[in-house]
Length: 581
Image 1: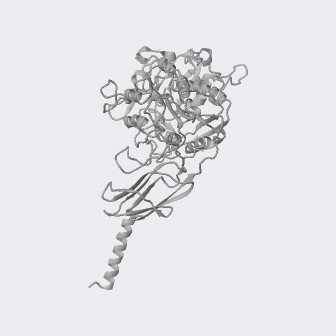
Image 2: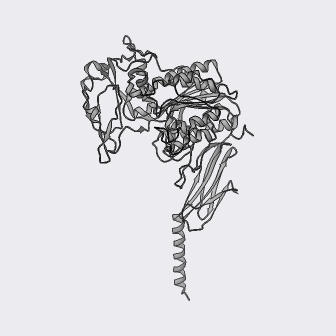
Image 3: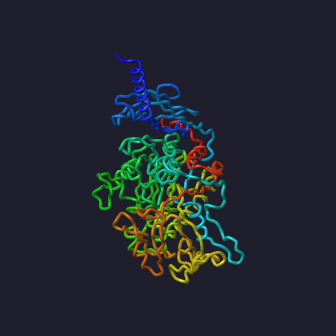
């Protein structure tokens, strides 16, 4: 028999053990607390309880009532999970409460459906990596200044005739920094998403394709209004930005799965135009990176798509479902396609369409749907060349996208039910800090001209067949990046692209010796970790330019998730409706 003192000690020990167990337990609820969704927007409800005894149970309540239909799993001995897919909420505030083995709570807001449609069609341009400073560099190249009076000679098309203007901040679910997957997902879903994730919430499983999903604006418009959906990019087609609107995965590198979801998923795009055929062809075809025999070029045509693979074929297409692949991987940069034109660089892809061609043909195709359309057009190669510090290729791809914006603005004038938006997913740490006198040769620090010595750039003195300035002025720009690896600088555009770094064989990177031995090249010490081979995204805000009905929804300071709700408002989206039922 225990003495009173022993009983007290035993009770104290039991209490401490219980408190220890409770302290170790953790509850995660998705959608996360503080999330905003559209009323009727579908999502997967996921509750994960970890650090509990084997066999532990929990109760999940929504607004005080038990959630029916939950699927219970145990991914480890001390965890229990509950999942319910395809949930939606009525307008208002809602609370998910977890009790039992551990306790937790998350509150989310379902935004009320829009009552009036301001726009029937939306063309959303996303310049990948096109922060304010990238736009400014493109403006300086495109127009420059009148040397007689110092007045600017013009602005970019995306900057003129505005109906709305906003500055957009961005961040991830797990960091204040971003990648293209989570930023595009925020625009597509209105949610904060993990870096490298596409329109899903986190979970505790290894399967990257089973994460809880959140419905995208493209999927909602297809389901609720049966609208046409189009995805266009100069990057490879399964890359993060187009994928975020029509695919769901924890890992943006699930390229084959993304390709499959374009044709099997809920968004069901009617127009797909981009590079990257290697994710759509059977593993038996040279260049494929699939691990199966799927061939979407053949299978898509059985589904009613017209397939095209060159600019000539694209411009002849007259169809309601259009699928185009114009390169094995990414498009070549605008400079490579139009100004440098090196056959060894272009290879077999000598007839790639311009971004304005693809925009025009996509709109022409989607316009056959009387219910309206949503078209996302990405200038995908801007970011691809800012990363390796090749600012000229990146900026000239902005100029290519700007001509596509010009076409869309003209279309909007004759189709006043169209909203045109131009924004970016994230920025790079680019800055135009001086002028450069190219008559003094490459890599010459004494040719870097500051303050009044900078005078005015002369890019516009010579233009190519499309009216875009040549990249070889006598007086140009000195452009740099804040976050860099060790590399060699020359200040000039090179006709054939070169990586700024190479592997040092020890897990790090060194300046590319092929660049360092070029005329005038000089070494610049980096400030990023030594295992970083290129520049990185910055936390800088990005612009948003808007034109047409609903443009007033895009004004002032916005978080990137706000873009989703502003588009839904402009298009009068009622996600509680289902056009197919």
